[in-house]
Length: 274
Image 1 (tube, rainbow, N blue to C red):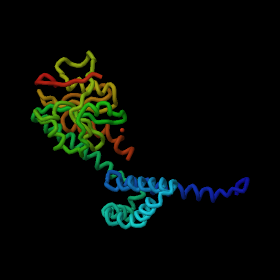
Image 2 (image 1 turned 120 degrees about the vertical axis):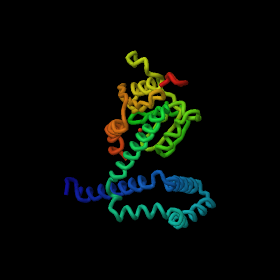
Image 3 (image 1 turned 135 degrees about the vertical axis):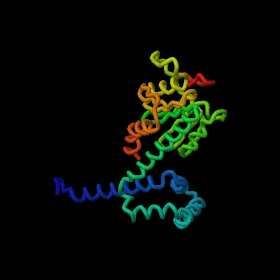
């Protein structure tokens, strides 16, 4: 018992009670994130909002309708969202609901690295020019807005197909965020550094330029030589094979995948713009 009659055990019990409820809510939200259930959650908040408005304004007809929705809503939810509910129960049964799922995070990282390296290796052998930028801490929103929205799952086939010559999206940079292709045909700032080799063209200058103003990682596949280059923090690493590229990506991306669950324009034409 503390001074003033406050029971420390009651205080701790209340804190644990609230913390447990918030933790369970957080895990539920993470579980349904990216599924159609998240739209249901938004709909529930909208219905509750209408109910409060109808209550304060005494809109009796609206109240009766919403009350019926609330009564029969849980039954409809169980019928419509059986897969999500089954997955949640399976996770609870495996004990993974209350633990951080590092395995899935590592799987996503491996899939991202595999997709990028396979795509770059394929394009390098066939001398298909490419420019791929991976967002890290610095928000790339301004650059994303200059391109065409994709918001597709990253696969080596989709990434390769974007850069096939004479297709609408091949001319520009692809911007990735974790395991998603956010946008294609994006414009990046050109580096004005005098130390860049004269033999390098627009793609490399764009890769260097974005690495000088953000912490993004950028991979360049040369159309002339098929060589793969890599930039970060204003540094250019040239002539990488698939294994070297894979190791560098893992080193620079691992912390961003495992630690959590964020000008001048240019174009290039012809063979000289590598």
